Each structure stands twice: as C-alpha cells, then as structure tokens.
Length: 429
Image (cartoon, rainbow, N blue to C red; front, side, top):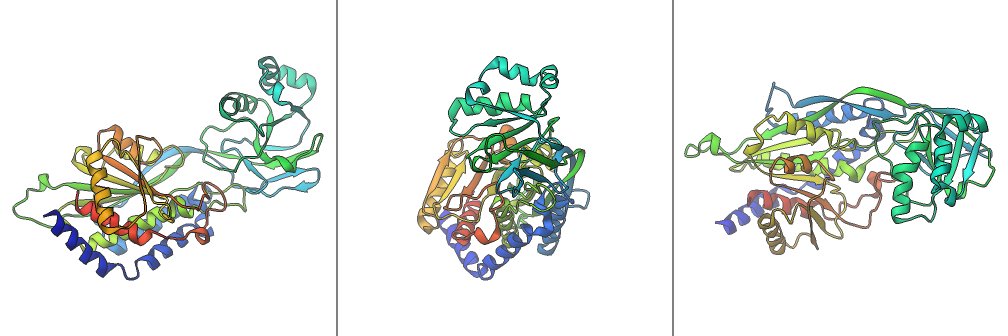
C-alpha cells in the first residue's frame, strides 16, 4: 500500500513541478524586497507580509478555519529603530550593518562621548564593574560611556561578558564593544537605558572621538498576526469527520526589520524561502488533496521569541490533540549539504520513514538528525505533546541575521527536490 501511495505521489508531483520554482522565486523575491521593510516592526513591515501571504492563501483557495478569516492577531512589546542613525569615530561616519551593529535592546543616544576604555583585565574585575555601574562614580568622573574590547575572548569568558557585564553597564552608560565576530542582528523587547553598539575593531583606535545619533522607539503593544488556512481531506463517507487526521505545515514569515532609516535585513533564506515552500505545498495540496486535513500556518513573532506559535498553542483554532504531525520549515533556499531534522531522536519511526523515502528518490545528499531544540515554532507544539519536525537546509550560504541574506545570494539548489521529499513524507504519514 505504501509503495502504491509513493508511486501515486510521484505521478502527481511530476505533473505539478512545472513553474513551481519560478513561483517560489517570485514569492521569496517579493517578501525580501525593500517594500516589506525586512518584515519587521518598522513601517508595519510584518503586517504587509501577513497581508501578502493572506492574499496568496486566497488565490490558492485555502479554507478559513475561524471567524471567516485567515488572521489570528496578538500583541507584543518590541524595540525598534525607525529613524536615521549615525556613528562617527574620528570624523569617519561608519556604515551601519557593515562597520557596526546596534544591540536589539539598544537605547537612544545623541551625544559626543566622554568615555573610558577598559582593558580585558579590567572588564573581569568585579570592583571596577561596580564602579561603572554606579551612577555616583560615573558622575564623579564626568563620563558618559565606556569602550570595551572583546576581541579574542572565547568560551565562558565571552559568555560572561555578554550575559552579565555588558547588560549591567548598558543600564548606566553608553557602551561601545569592539569585536571581530560576524554581525548577527535580532529583535529586542527590553530596551536598555543607554546605547549598546558593536563595532568592528579595526574601525577604532585608542582615544578616538565618538559621537552618536541613535533613536530607539519602544512599542509596548505591537499588533502581530499569524496567517492560517486549510485544505480539507478528501470526503469519505466511510470515515467519520472526527477520525480524520490533521497535518500542520508551518513557517515563520517575520524577520528583523530595519536598523535605522536606510538599513534593512532582507531575510531571504530566513525565512522568505520557507514561506515560499509552505505556499508551494499549499498550492499542490489544494489541487491534490489527500485523506488528511492539512493546515498551513505562517507564524509571526518567531524572531522575538517564538511568540506567534506560543500564542497559537495557547489559543488554538482547533484542538491540539487532533494534530497528527507538524512539519515546520525554515531556511529552504539552499540544501547543497543536505537538511537537518530537529526532533529526529524523539520521533525515530517518522525519521526513518523520511530517510527511506529519500533513499528511494535520492533527493537530498544528507538527512542529519538532531535532538530537541527550542529554536523555532515547532517547540511549543512539542511541549504540548504534538509530534513535530523542524526541517532546515544546510549549504555554503552562511548569511544569517545580517544584511547579506538577500534573494541574489540564494541558490534554491535543492528546493524542487525537497518539495518532492516533503510531499512524499506528508502523504505517507
């Protein structure tokens, strides 16, 4: 029976592949364009993306599960940077996203700095830390900022600096951190009292002049929206509706938005490409329904802490116990080095099924198992005992949470093959 299902699936797939990659490219290109402002919290970029996805659901013909709507809204706090920002060091105006990055929880700063530069030894001196966290000491020295150099630090030392020292300092002083690490931006929801800026170490010399113009805007209650639609199972008079299985296919659509007026984070691989895969699967199953209900969810708020999926699990549009399996998709734009499956060790039977199907189809070069991880929207479902995989591709494209995660840097090397693998797996669950 399974061999028959596999063959039928292949026949349907071969007839639907034409034009698929072109449409996936269109969706990805659109979602990571400047018009969507990085799908974040400046200029309602995330809302524009939600509306675009809802329109795609409508074109495909997905059913609405509740309130005659595709949209499930919730509110969340978020720190944003909607205005122009400037960092000048020794009369050199640095390039945001290239030469420096503000911390997601960075506060406002519009000053010419009076600062002290700490050595690596001083950074770890608890007495010196207390001095600079003390507003009395700061005022006595007439300083407004501190420069610290974390280049060369690794392991526990670097972790301690990030988690303990820097946040404490940023509540009392402007902090500039010299680093040689790759820049990775994220989204914050607990703004510091002062600015926190990471700068490439080669852009700074001792006793350099520093001036900043940074304006953060804290949104206490930003409205975010999950987008939800469904392809119902093929009608079967012999099967009771309550016995019909439901599969969830999910992908987050939000990204990091903007850092200042001119710099935005496209999020092509993360996760415009995942949304493209979700929409291609939705289009396929609308034309080729199976004996399961298939619910498609584009989650908001993943980058802020998996908020969209957390909200759905708290207020589900259908009972969670009815979900037979969930497949969460992210980073679908490469695949040259295979895919990783989170929760593979939890659901070994399904993982072996996925590997067996891939051996028959020879679609991806490697399927790497990984254990539990709270790294995407599958997590809250897993916590509620819903069987779930989180699948993402691996490849040479390492642009992640930076300004270089663009459409032009995607290869879509295994997109069509991964579509075949996912479709076969879902049909065989």
